Length: 216
Image (tube, rainbow, N blue to C red; front, side, top):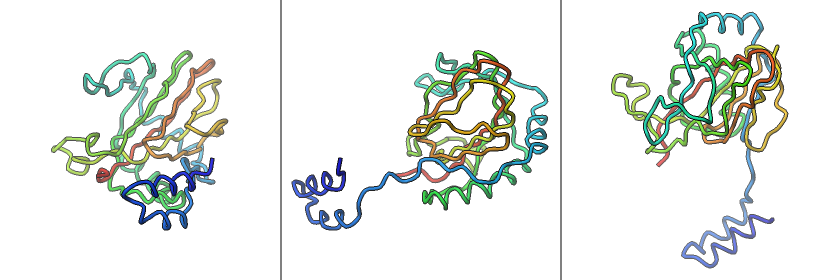
């Protein structure tokens, strides 16, 4: 389908007909919905991140109409939350590069507590969004001024091991993502994604959410 023609024809029939010519000069493009850096995080660093959890994992929950920390049939995982500065220092430059190279240019000012996810056999996370970036989805927490009134804009997952089967990360529009230790994947938090059930072994990953001023 010629989306540029559809847009132009639609504009001609609306109050915005004056910008139809401009729209025709700027064709719609799909853009990038994911960014995977060429560089991998070394195995020993991945092991250090995993060891920082001290195997202190609790059940994974979701945010829904009933509020935060709700159990849900779409998610069966174990999680550990952390905030060690060296982990942020490790990931932050890659986030900045992804934001620039993928041509997103999102306003990013901080990151939430990161999560180390543990998926044992049979565990999964169904299709979901991490956030929408809107004013209505912003975080309200005056005790954390760097996060207060901020919304999730970018998400990152880092694979900490690969001695498992199943547990595939799927992002809308992408298939067969690599299972290499140290692989990072950045994507807008509004992209639908999932982790399929693990069929053998245990899958570990680091997840981080980057926040900024909500879209208006």
